[in-house]
Length: 254
Image 1 (cartoon, helix red, strand yellow):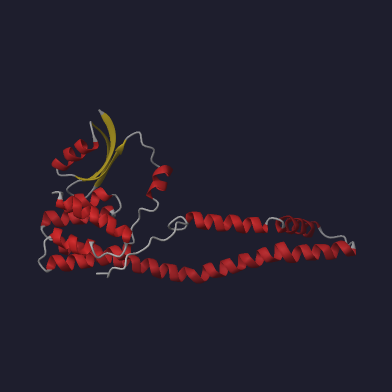
Image 2 (cartoon, one colour):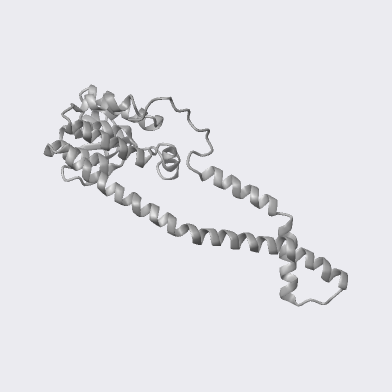
């Protein structure tokens, strides 16, 4: 019997995580699903989490705005009387976001195989836990469209606040960047030039001035290296990790 780290939600939507024993991942999933729990993830207990898990999650995040558009279309089709599987078929074939389309196709295949919609979303491992719990609540209450609309309203409010925060921080960030650039210019270019002038005059300078000149003269030789390191850090931590953009098919967005 192997040990597995299990993350699941109970009937009230509370998320739990524990270690359980089972012969296989499928057996553990089936056991907890039969007890009425919604299983999010099952991983070997020996698997290293933490930093390694964080790097594994890079590139698996979905575009929230496009996901909300998908949900709006999904709710519209459900309210029009289409079965869930038929609605997934129509939307999965027309999504222009390749990453989201791949996961929606996975959801469709799971549902076609007899899985619940909430289980199908949970098994993809990329959709927000709050969304999976919302779908589970909609399935059990018989009001799937209503609870998804509440989720969309909440996420739209969150996105709006986030955009306003980014806009409000843009001007201070610009001022900070320009100020930093000006300081770097003064320390690495202006100060060394004055150092050469004072050296030719053979003047006796105060201690703080000598320290500033020494810092500027030393930093001047490393300014290009500093810019190269900064660009490398930005590229490394930018969304996508410097990968080439995926080619998009010439399909019509639904």
